[in-house]
Image (spheres, rainbow, N blue to C red):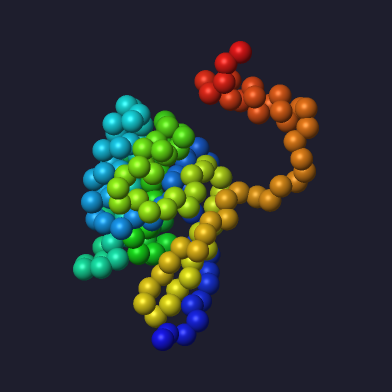
Length: 165
């Protein structure tokens, strides 16, 4: 048996206007399936995807339709370095537009987060490799929503077209 794993965090590097989805899968086919899912779900969405292969050549596999987002995905995937993890960066599209379709891909096991917030990935590293323990997504709460907050939230949802009236 190996020793206790060491824990660290990896800060996701991205612009404020870019959303991302971080997950775990079990097969190299993930790269093609996520590409097809995003491009088929939201025409015009810009995206970059990277998948960390965890056997064989152990390469970071990269796909997408936007070179900047592909480079962002590659660099963040290399920093995370956890086997079978994937990171998908989105522009002109929100995670809510593709999240259920991605969850329904046969080889997708877990979604850790879907956010535009600043985020840190909690990593455990052992002699065998690295794994994602969880995600720190944004900041901690500063209070409880009141009437002004409710009005702001429902207004935002209406502006995005998720609520009527």
